Length: 198
Image (cartoon, rainbow, N blue to C red; front, side):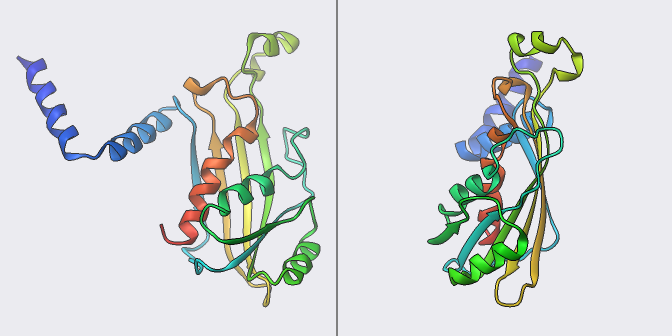
């Protein structure tokens, strides 16, 4: 009898939610339990920008702690792929730049904002038996992790309007992901949508 009551409650709850809401809730709880990829975005403010703002994206020269072999411009590339979905005028530096160089390039492109990114820390957990057998260290087992730092600046005034830290982790059920870079796109898409207030 108890199982019938529980089943009826679940069916009623499912009937009140849209499928997209159910998917989001399931992903949230499975991520919180460490079963699926999940991330946390910490912003210094709740700044929003106009949808027609011109955005220039660059990445610093900093090599991530714990993963020195990542592609040198990977965060800028992923941030660009995320930003072009919501902003019509986005440009990206082709290679890592210092902050002053990035601001000069942003001004030269007549961009309203510079999104300056840094791949602060990463951990590439061994995702296959073959990878683990190379070192045979239990410290190498586990999920991928990545920490990003983003600074959003007005190019005309050099004023910092948002400082962001993104912490992202792979999930146990998505153990096949090979590199921390695989964890970057979804949180960057989420952040660029938040810039528009979505």
